[in-house]
Image (cartoon, rainbow, N blue to C red; front, side, top):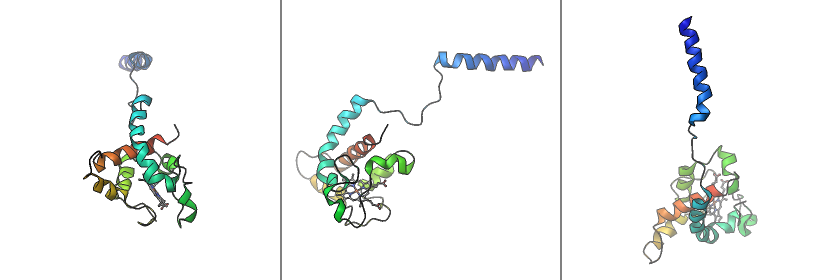
Length: 146
Ligand code: HEC
């Protein structure tokens, strides 16, 4: 009995002290810091506008100029979190890199921009393709509602 009471007291003390000591469950993913994110996202803006906005729209809503003539409507890229139950960062990276097929869509609808980015690597002033894909992935992540 003494042990039990003691046990409960320890538990109680722990519970009381937890917030004070700042012991909190570690979040699965750290929330992005706005200033740092803004810098990264700004780097991807040009590529997004050039390569993606025609179909996916300026805000990623799937309402670009070409949307109406496509057989399959472009995804609402601001709805990735909702559709996937969170942001599957490396799956999205692989989709942009053309390493992961986007279900139900063919190469005509979502051409492999990664290949163009790879070709750009030869030219001066271009980031390596994987950096541009990484930046674009962060860009898409930034489009998700908080
Ligand atoms: C020619 C039109 C077109 C262009 C340009 C285009 N996409 Fe797509 N994209 C689509 C279509 C259509 C789908 C939806 C396919 C489906 O629903 O099966 C799609 C789907 C996606 C998805 C999957 C979203 C999800 O929730 O699974 C991602 C990610 C994506 N596009 C990113 C991009 C990025 C980044 C660019 C620019 C580098 C880009 N797309 C350029 C047509 C396009």
